[in-house]
Amino acid sequence: MVSAWASRNDCCEAYIYYVSTNRLPFSLGTVLIGSTGFFVFKTEDIVRESRAAAITFLTPFLVGFFYSRNVNPVLQNSTLLFSFPFLLVFVFSYWDDGKTKLSKAAVNVLLGITLVSTVVGKQFYQTNHFGVFKELAEFIVEWNDEVKNDALLIGDFNFPFYIDYYIEKQGSTKLDLYRTTDENGLAELKTMVDTSTNEFLIYAWSTVNQVPEIEAVIKERFPVEVKRKSYFNSEVMMFRRGNPNWTIIPFRFEKNSTWNFDPAKIRIDTAGDNKYLMDIESPYGPTFSVDVDSLRDAGFSELTVFLNCSSIADSSEIQLVYEQENTDEKYSWESDPFGIQFNANSPSWGVFHYELKSVEGEAGTLKIFPWSPKGERLTITEMEVRLL
Image (cartoon, rainbow, N blue to C red; front, side):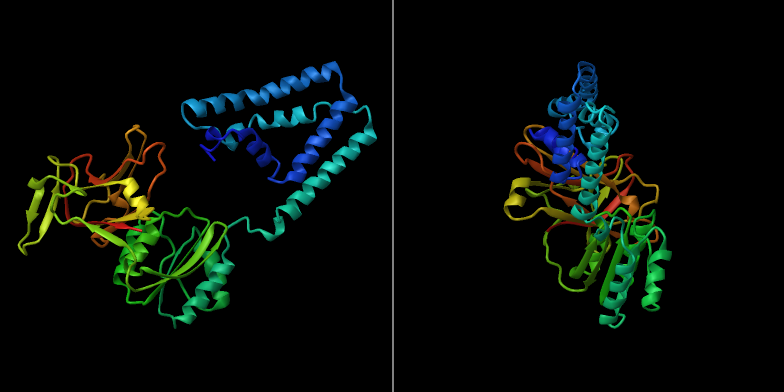
């Protein structure tokens, strides 16, 4: 919702709907009770106080709105967190203690509407508000039994105790890896999928931030998704070996409309195979360049970049750059460090996953290339883009 308000004329309505728990009865009840106070208790002093409350709330709202429309989108729900109480003061500012019974009745009605809206309308007690563990454990054990224990079991959990507790209640299964998003998680995951002899892989996570490279690494050796169960902030899925379903655009050490590079940096090893050298003289690797509209027209919205290269130090600053720009100079730029996936103890291949970005105006051109900011040496033996 960061930038949505800046492009919608109903941003005020959207915010009011949000703070009223997205329930129409709560919104109507609040407006009705606030209006009742206006007609019953209205005095000139109260009117002045209500105006002050309205101005205090509207000022940061309007500043954020016009700044988002004309400069940079910043307006979101959290931006109005500190001014929100003044909205409540404005709505109920006309009420006073002149009619005690009426005031108590109004409070009880509002509490009743809030209770019903939260518990019944939002299904508070039927909704998972945190990532689950019990359900994941049940599927891990059940699916592993289905494939006769021929599954590599991978998880991502801050504290393995929780998932182990529920797994032990189902059986004696233990996960082969409990973390994939810590400092060495992706490198360890690569090693495990690279050396595994299992036909299947089961992956589960809960209450941790996930990066798309996790599934990309898994699909490098287990490309077929068998099934998946998703919960709030948690998920479990099963993959198996098989033929991948993606379109490959390989780098063949030849210049063409899609790949550009410095021909002077091609090396040939003793086996007669081509390699590409990045160093201080040429800090940019082979560049994949394509028209974004052509990808979208072909039905592609995601891509994975596969690289095979020489080992690098854990402290390396080499990174893969994703750059998407158009003729209106609207662009999206991001980079991912190699060090997260490549180290001395992990396989020499790595994968980076991206989704095509939505850019105002013409979609323009997409460029992807390795970059060595300090001119560190890197030898690339294989590189390809896989369209999904």
